[in-house]
Length: 213
Image: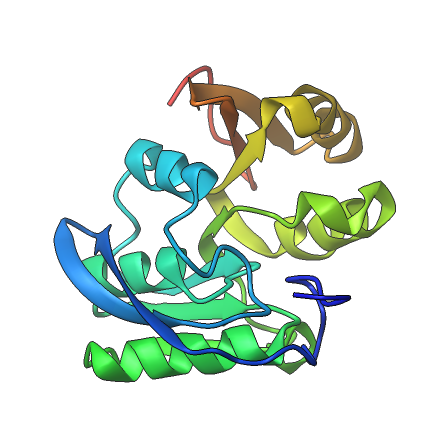
């Protein structure tokens, strides 16, 4: 990708569109990916671990895929919950174009691929599912989570997958300290070197504290 990163707003590298076959929401699907986005050649291991360890998505409301890339989490949620509105949020314009392209090819009309600032301020989410961009750096990552986790609906959950050797445990401690009181965070699964973190926004009246998935 040259000097491009998957979190580059407008990648300058060649697009190099390609078709790959992936398994999403229990279906074998052909999707389009490109250079200059995250994991263009395959469903990356972390996202696969997240998809395998998430509960069913809420059947309606607004659902958020934070850092969507070409859209595996967004497409999975849209397929599983056709009456929900899925927000695929990324800073990479090429990634968002791929989400739109893939959603259209699959006949999914419930996906909004959007830059962060284009999501209306009054939209809140019944769930957040994310393979967050750890490599943007700690300060950027923390700012990202501080912006979006509070937009969970009351008594709703965010599910994050983070590689263990890229700071999953320290991120869990930071979330626990930063979003307190009113939230809980627990590690609910591990696999292939990744941790799944579940963040619950308890709301008012509060939910019971969560322990495991």
